[in-house]
Image: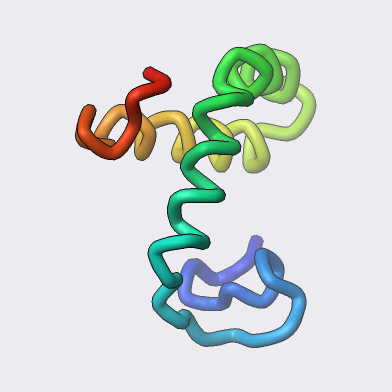
Length: 75
């Protein structure tokens, strides 16, 4: 298991967190919203195969629920 403060497995370069700029946040958020149905299907697919990955998908979907409506008109 990867230690929660080590982000290397996510970005492949660094092990410290850097704040994302607004354009990057919008791009990532748009992608998650666009792929929400696929992510939900993926969660159920990986729930028994790879529970750790399923949890990461679940976390992404959970964060999407906290996005203000003004930030996402696609929801």
